[in-house]
Length: 289
Image (cartoon, rainbow, N blue to C red; front, side):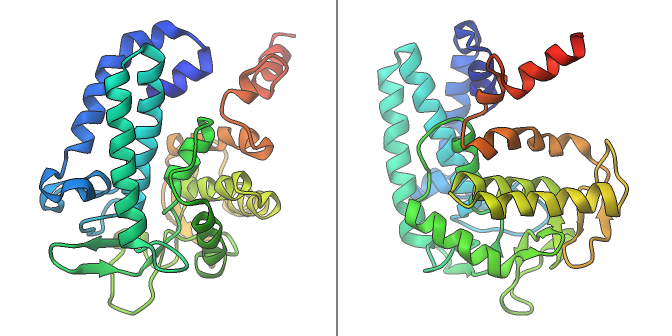
C-alpha cells in the first residue's frame, strides 16, 4: 500500500523499480502466514492465531474478513505493480491467491447482511459480532483506483446493516456485540469509536454511492473532535459513540486518513487531489503567494 501510494502520487517509475522486490517478498510472506489452512490462510490470522488485527487487544481466530479484505487489497496492488514491471509470473500468482482467498471469505463468512467477525474451520469457533471496519480493504482499493475486493452487492448490504448496528451520534463504533459475553472487545469497549476507522467507513460510503450519509458521518466524527472535545492537531484516538466522551488519545498520525476524503468525495483515487489544479496543488500554490 505504501509503495504503490508513493508511486501513484509521484508517477515516478523509479520508486516502483527500487521497492518492487521488497514488496514482492513481503507479499509472499504475508500470503503464507497460515500455510496449513490452504486457501483459507490467505484471509486468516497467522498460524496458531498468533498475531493481532490492527484493532488490537481482542482475540480473533481463523478467517477474519477485516484482515482478509486487507490481504486481498494487498494482492490487487501487488498484481498491478507486477504487471507494470513485467513480472507476469508473479502477477498470475497474485491473481490466483486473490481468487482463492476471495472464494473462501465470501463462502465461509457471509452472514446474509454482513460478514462474521471471524470463523475458524478447524475448531468451529466463530463470532457474529458486527465490526464496522470489516470493509476497510474496499476503501484501500478504491483509494488506489482498483477493482473491489468484496462482492459489490454484499458491500451495499453490509453498509446498510452498519447504519443500523454501529453508527451512533458521534461516529461508528468498532464493534457491535450481539449477545452479552460473546466477545471481549478489550479497551475498545462496546461503544468505542476509533476516529480513523469511523472516517474510513465514512469514505467507504462515499465511494459506494452514499455520499450524503458518508459526508454526514465524517462531519459528526470530526465535530466531536474539534468542537465538542476541543482538539486541534492531536486528536483523541478512541471515544464513546453515544456520549462523545474520550477514552484514549491523543494520536494524530493515524488520522492522516482524513486527507483522503477530498478524493472520496469525488469518487476518485488518491492521485486526483494531487493533479494540476487539484486540492493539494492549489494549497501549495496558495502557500507560495
